[in-house]
Length: 144
Image (cartoon, rainbow, N blue to C red; front, side, top):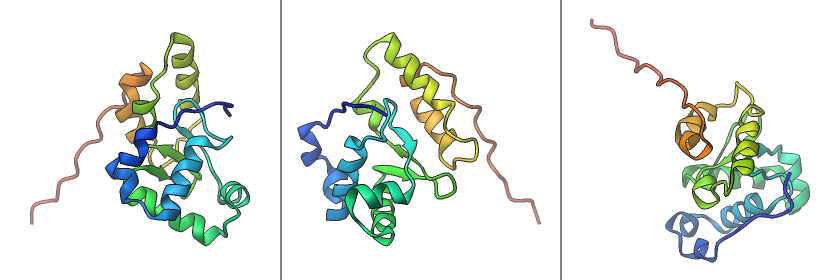
């Protein structure tokens, strides 16, 4: 949990943000400013948290997450209910070694079964100063 977060005014000019629906934009701003957020842009976000805070029914929250995922703003694992704001570390890189250590520690909290964890680690490894996971072998079709 954090007490402070940055939202740049340029978000209103971002093609990704402008492509979102009204509910998508509201949910995006919520994810950037909610009390559940962390220094690396990954956190657990069950429907109930967002439903309570936004005063939305769960169907509206799910539709909002679908919109964010389709537009590559945020991805949520339906199994673990963990969220990754995809460009969070690009917009908010760790500013000092202590912040980097805190962000690294949070990676260990992301459940192994989280659908996007390996992608997050590949994309954000450099920003976090961690080793990326090994590349997954490409699947080939057997010859007939």
